[in-house]
Length: 350
Image 1: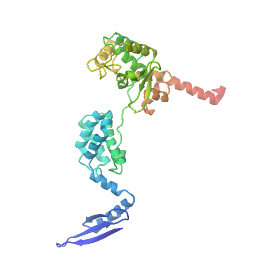
Image 2 (image 1 turned 45 degrees about the vertical axis):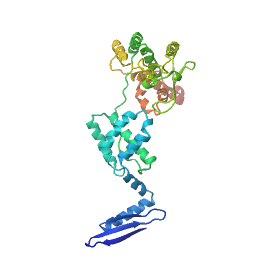
Image 3 (image 1 turned 180 degrees about the vertical axis):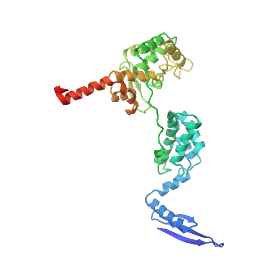
C-alpha cells in the first residue's frame, strides 16, 4: 500500500514523500512538490508493480542505447556475416540516439532518425531498411534476452516502402552470346563460374565461394551448409557442369580447397569482375549484373511451369514473397492449371 507523508522545511516550503510497500517487493519511494502529483505517482506505480511492469521500466532507465549497441557488438555481432556493414550503422545510431536511455527511446525518435539518415546520406528505401533492421536486432535482444526494457519500440516504426524487385534475365539470343564469349575468355574460370550460376540459381557468394568438399560428383550436387537464410540446401549440377568439374578435378590446385581460388591468395575466391565486364561488352549485353544470372535461372524455371513454392525451394527462399516477382512469367502454366480445375468441376462442359 502507498503511504504519503507531508513534510515542511524550515523555510516553510512543503513536499510530499510517497512510500509504496507491497509484500515480496522492495520499497519504492519518491518526493513531490504537490499532493496531486504524489497521489498520481503512487497510483500508477503501485498498479505497475502489481502488473509486473515497474521494474522493467526502471531497468530501461538505467541503460542507454549506446550501452545496448556496445553489448550487442561485443556478444552477438562477431558471429554475423553482415558485421562490417552493421558496425557502420551502429556508429551512426550511437552518434544520433546513443545518449538516450531505453526508457526514453521512442518510436517517433527512431522514425525521425531514419528520415534524417535517408536525407543526410541520400539513401534509398532498401538502405534505410538496413539501418532499421540493424537497430531492431539490438532492441529485440535488449527486450527478450537481457530484459533491459519491457518491449522494443520498433513495432511502431514503419518499414520503408521498398520498390518492386528488379527482374532482368537473358533472352535466348543473349544467353547464347554470353556463354560463347565466356567460353572464349582468356580467364580459365569465367565460363564454368557463369554456367554454374546460370544453371543452379545459386547466389554469387554460394557458387564463387564453394569448396571441393561441397561437391559430390556422384550425386551431382553442390551442398550449401550455411545459406543466407540460415538453412541447408543442395544445388543440382547439370551434365555440362559436371563434365567441366570432372576435368577441373584432375588439375585442381593442391594449395586451396576452393573451387575458384585466386592466383594471388589461394584462400580467397578469384575476382572475376574484369573478365565478366569484358564478356558482357563482347556479347553486346547491357544492364545486366552477375546476380541477374540467378534471375535468369528463376525466370526460365517459371516459364517452364515451376510453381511459386517450387521456385522458393530452388532459390532457397523461406517465403513466397521474394518469388512473386516471377509469377507473371508463367501464365501458360497457371492457365493450364485453371483449365484442369474447371474440367474436374464441370466435366465435359468445361
